[in-house]
Image 1 (cartoon, rainbow, N blue to C red):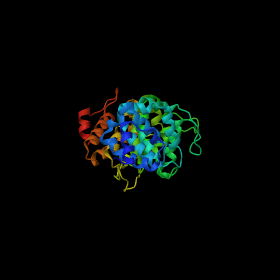
Image 2 (cartoon, rainbow, N blue to C red):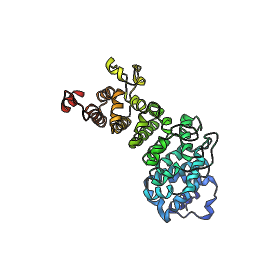
Image 3 (cartoon, one colour):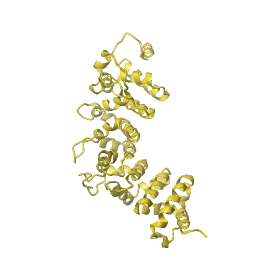
Length: 359
């Protein structure tokens, strides 16, 4: 005869939770949810039975005691890779509000798990409604009633447990990266917000050299996705606006010594770096930054800005230092764009000669 814990797990899996179990003691639900976590990766299809009844139950368990809610959130994170589950969760306004209430609570124990789930939900087009969603202001975290502003404040003010001792909010970086794929998201990130008069992207650029790999990768991807918006390039490049170049180039630099000629054309932030300066160690991030720079060369103004910033010497040294095919290809593509003749210009060397000499 199955134990009570096994009964809870079984009925949850099959989508037939009896009414008697709905309000059962947490001593039974806690191990039951723990048992279900493994099934969410090994047999995810069983959670789709009964017209997603198990998913409906899991949404309710997010409101339960901390350990039960944690396991329910982990299960939903695992299952939201499935498009049917993703769309079901993403369209639920009440569920989204439930997540927002908890992630903005400075004492909530499972804020990181909610950040992970939001990062997955952002892969649904419907989630972009968060950009215009208004809700109660979660003071003292934020003075804005806009949900996206509130998540930005979680990310910035909550780094390394500064707002919530149980959370670092790092996974919101992935959420921002997916939101930045939408034109509405690109507009948000490059527009000063009414509540603090700050352009949101300037709050993220400072994390390109943060200790957290998740933050660095998510922010790098956000910068890249915003850079697909060509009308935003003047703001991205302007030293008096977003000024993205120092924050993209710094992770590409190591402790190399540059010639005076190279140093004189480099941005002030890149000059006289200490000899122990470390280049970004994750090649995915290096590749992403190189792709961002390539996107910023779409216009003549962008190419000139990168040349004036001393982008070439930094990319040259990155190419020499990193033995990775994708990084080197990214360097090659960028250098070819920066070193080619512009229309109407005449140089002594033809393009083929110049590219050979670059490296």
